Length: 365
Image (tube, rainbow, N blue to C red; front, side, top):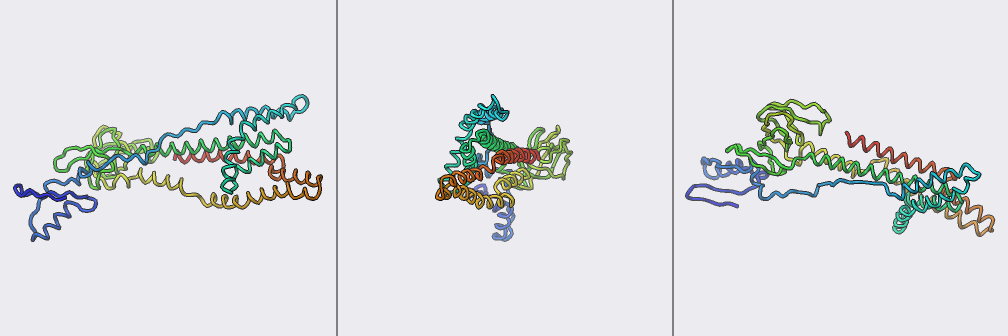
């Protein structure tokens, strides 16, 4: 929008300084008006005032706190499984193996629901395998083994969910490092205007008082103080900053002196914003190893299930005894030779524990 005040001989132009600066506009007009002297009365792009009415706080990137608590059914399933393990002592303790049925009853339904949803999409996943393993162990009257498969898989999923929630909370904490507002100094009037950090243009002067966050990456223009960079670098000792030294957005003025910082990047291109984008990309992108394992599982899982299904059905055509023998072999194939379900689920448990530890280390880093 352009408005002209002929009495005061003032031309007012509303423009976006990211695309057209006031200086550039003056140079253009001077070239069209035979090098006329056109002074700049005020430049809203210097202090970000041009965006004050148009900027709205963006809450799309807000990440809320995530909590992951273990279901009471998983805990009860584990307690009942431990009780059923005493049946391995034999003798008068043998009847405790039936307690494992209660363990399966409490722990298996969530796995079964996920497995059926996967089967409805004509696909197989680890939930299907664990469901078949648990049911197969029950068919072989290995109740304790079935309870082990159910509980250990359920707790591995719970630990993995908790690790994921912890990683999301860590990302939320990093996002909270982004300052919401900035105290922009008008280079002409020296007035301070509080604006959203996202509205601060490159080259603006911002005032960072003691205890305030630096809104954008920039260079110290005036003042001397110490900056707490532990949120970005992990270094607990504040770093002394003087004119000409670079500061990063999201760090805190830990000294007692105000700093005037000249911004060199917008808040969307600050160190904190780049860190957030790196973490988001790392979460979205899958590693080569993970993609290889998933590709292998898509082929391996259906083959195992179809082979076991064939052993449980086809041999019945050759007689009852043959059918019973091969049906048992088919169930053993799913359960992986009796003791292997426990080994498989222990691997799943260790995988979840490893993921939990790795995500904890990454989040701390």
